Image 1 (cartoon, rainbow, N blue to C red):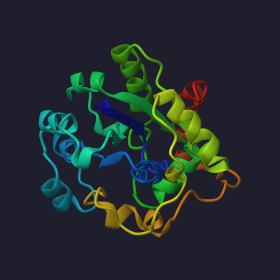
Image 2: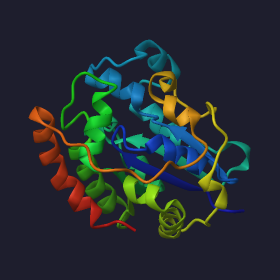
Image 3: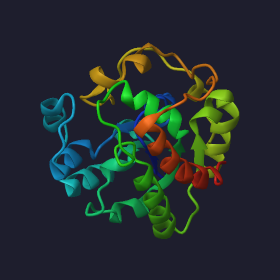
Length: 242
């Protein structure tokens, strides 16, 4: 029997994470999970987000229950599970013992792009809201828990050459390359979270990876200050790019 591989990819919001879920979900051997700790985080953090009621009704609100689901048998005989995680959802008090049974990867994006994109969807932007400090903490945590250096990929580099970067990521994760990761059918998917109608409009129209990105947005005011703080974390993690 082929052993099950559980891949947890850690990203901040507006970081092409849903596109990566599409890519892994297009594999013949893979099933995907969309932000499983979202509802638990909303309850524990006391935060209100768009489509709050729908999110809370769609997932377990107890982080221990979420963890148990993540380690359950996979449907349809799948050999690979792709878990799309938001770094800010994983509060320090949430259990992480389940993480030792997963392989971890980190998806990063230049903070100027993240902030500009986030500000189009949400009114308040902060360093914690875009998940950069949490991503650094979780990178160190997963490295310590698994004894492995988690592979890192950058959104801009993926868009510049999806085949090359994803093939190297698959090699680092010790799973076979699947050409199907480069394209998918447009529209909603069964794994999409209840919040998809608010956030996934562009992804629902996509059939593959988009064009290589243009120049970085130029930020000012408070956004520029947040970018400066996040940039140090981004550059640290970028050193581990596959």
